[in-house]
Amino acid sequence: MTHKAVVVISGGMDSSVLLHFMRHQHPTYEIHGISFAYGQRHAKELDFAKLQCDQVGASWQPVMLPFIRDLFADSHSSLVTDDDVPEGHYAESNMKATVVPNRNMIMMAIAAGYAVSIKARILSTGVHAGDHFIYPDCRPEFFDLLDRAVYAGNQGFIDASFELKRPFIHKTKADIAEMGIKLGVDFSQTWSCYKGGDLHCGRCGTCVERIEAIQTAGARIQEGMSAKGQYVDPTMYEDPDFWKEALKRETVEK
Ligand SMILES: [Zn+2]
Image (cartoon, rainbow, N blue to C red; front, side, top):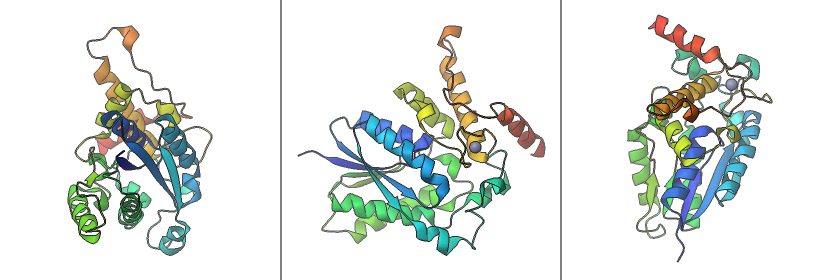
């Protein structure tokens, strides 16, 4: 019997690396990608999510959640227009504007239902340590409880060895980027930017965080290698150098 795994994939860097990691760890598994859309901003990410699934031979299931926009529009400024997207380093408090309340609970509940219905052994998410600071529903304690809740809520229907895998939960974004480089993930075929331009803007919080992570990972890999082995981020950014300024600014503010 072929085992199945469901991977939550946004089309961003972390979940794309997760998808390739799962393929690497479970070469014989049937992998099913699932993506969530709750606003136009993510339409572009979805194309990349599908592309990544195609690359590893996974099926792909997009799920539209238009109600999130309607129901939660007033509770946080999470669904701001592109002009309002905060710039700078992700750790800055203004990045709280990108919080969608209870997002992970909603998405993971749907993903878990899908995993149970196709009798998957694994449900996997790319949540990582860098998310903990801003998003409470990305913290280890939340996922420990969710793991138990999914199991308790599906007793008798769920695969006995079912696991809610979150392999990056204690890893930094740089660790994930490093793993992605080693797994041969083409970052130019992932999408992180909060703005909907043709290229990554290089200035929004997710862009800055992404570039910093890839640069850190590239530098780590490069240690002990010749200059020829230098890793170059294949992503095109509108403003490729702003991240340095953003990091400097953050250091000063601390
Ligand atoms: Zn951006």
